Length: 268
Image (cartoon, rainbow, N blue to C red; front, side, top):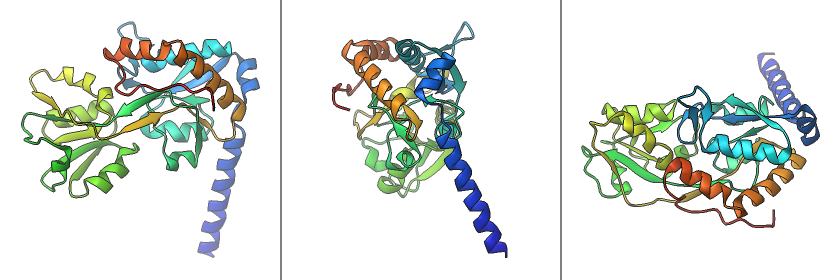
């Protein structure tokens, strides 16, 4: 009886999940409403954060506003922590999601992606207290790596640095705080998004290893089967890439060129 009840409840959950996805707002509904709901990270400069004027600012904000203008609508920003990005899309709480959403097979089972918006190059951020010259040296149980819950890097670390311990935290600011306090030894991540937080700890001697581990491609997330919205976003992204807007906006906020630029393709 109990097993049957569990089976029924699971079936209801899957059905509700499917209804939520099916009820994602269509392109026509978004245009008629005049507003597109955009999920962005609340405390992730220079991607997105609350600025000195108490308004959201950053790379993702500028990109979202540009794409919204291409659609002829306004943006409604929704604060979305890293672990909430996919659930918020599935639950139809947002129409699209930015926030460094790396394309992975696991995520693609639940959501859809546009063509790439930008890249992320993985590296190692540590301090002068950690005497290593290569990321492979971190594969040792004496080292603790810090990582945000819900990011794809978890699988990479388990496969490539299985001996290291992992300290899970909730935000980018938490990762840098953990390193500064000595609770973790290194961050193996797409560190260009994390480095801005190091300015909060000027007495720490920060160190970035020169070796790049790999490059990932980040698209804009949206609900599965929302093909009309995806197609128009892909067209808009092609325009903002070829015009130079994406790379210019990246350099404006990150103060350096994208390590690996996205090469726009007319075929999508």
